[in-house]
Image (cartoon, rainbow over all chains, first blue to last red; front, side, top):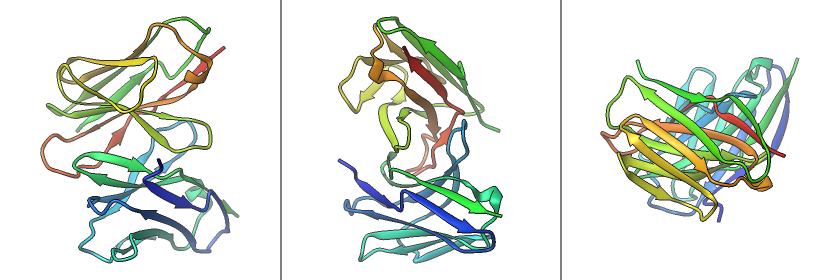
Length: 110
Length: 114
């Protein structure tokens, strides 16, 4: 069964806008939450990650918000650019057992 | 620095033919190794993972198998491919030392079974 639920499935944002992708999990044993970015024909690449003892982590235009009590976390891409157009996966990890969401296809229109 | 190599990049095989996909990692020792499959428009499904030579864990029953003949080599095989085996296969590694190490993916193999 899907251990990590991701939404939306696809997202279209205008250049300069904010892209928001949400994920939810059930297993409270998960203790590491990375986001991956995948371009067509390539493998996913680690974008940013957070641990549950932190509520927010920011790296450049990318921010993870984490709500431990709700078992939800989200990726915010500020000032979205056409080069950000890719598929984004959230994931949750416990003891090197990484489970992925179904992915969000982001399109940033110029 | 660590690198991961997967080949071939694309492969077209007829139903019933065998399969062998290879993955090698450089620049690290005793990595955890993984095979994932990505179906079109879907997420990443874990197929196999290995914490050491000869140690393979399978996540889902299927006609695929994996082997780890050397520390940094991971092979995905099938004796007879099915149409449903088509997909994008990704090899990944993570550091053995330390819990919750990030996964590092190769560039994948696009397999089409005809």
